[in-house]
Length: 298
Ligand SMILES: [Zn+2]
Image 1 (spheres, rainbow, N blue to C red):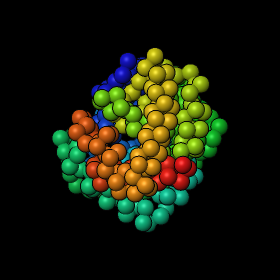
Image 2 (cartoon, protein in one colour):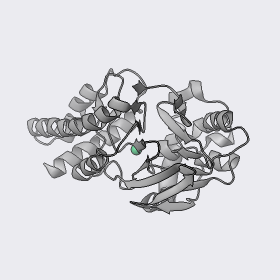
Image 3 (spheres, rainbow, N blue to C red):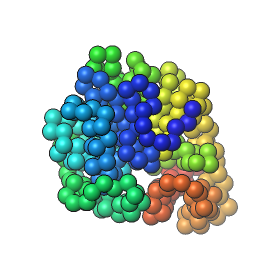
């Protein structure tokens, strides 16, 4: 099954907020959140967490990487859930300590409010991104037993960013891969978002293919279950190879002129596409990085 709406996915595991910028909740003795979406949706995530947990509170928030749309609501979580422990990679923790990174995360969160206007619950202080401290850093191979029958296995999956982590819950066969695999749009097209390095990105995906997965949660838009989960992993690998070849071909045709390549690729994978999309400015910035990754390797 391919799920594109919020709600319970399998027993005790939920997608919250907005499918475009989801927060996931794994219930248990110590409930855990995964990622923190947009700042402006903080109140919505919190309300949905409360609807499920009642007076209980989440004990962990596992962050996948330091991009603005995955850490936006951390300060809102800390305000409502004062004992929550924020978990990230060591590299992401370093990013969250840099004033210029914080300024950019704040600015991009502000700029994204118009994209999800209908989902915003209330304005005010909680809607602004605030700097936060990471409480626990984790690394490849760590296994955190968080509840009876629920542990979180840490998988380092760089390539989209250097600080990307994926999380695997072996008892439930749930993989939270965020943007380590491609992002599939409503037409089935998969964006291969290797902003750092093609080979590192591909290797990270390959590392996760053999995992026994009943559920694979992507960072934006969709959750895949059972056979669709297995297909999504394989499709991400082939989409990545295909995109690399396409960019390489267009780069050759345009004699390495990145601006021209950008225009042609944008027509193929962004213009006229339905559904929730990242803002054009963010898309173009990322596209340039992806083209440069291909250029460097080719
Ligand atoms: Zn990202």
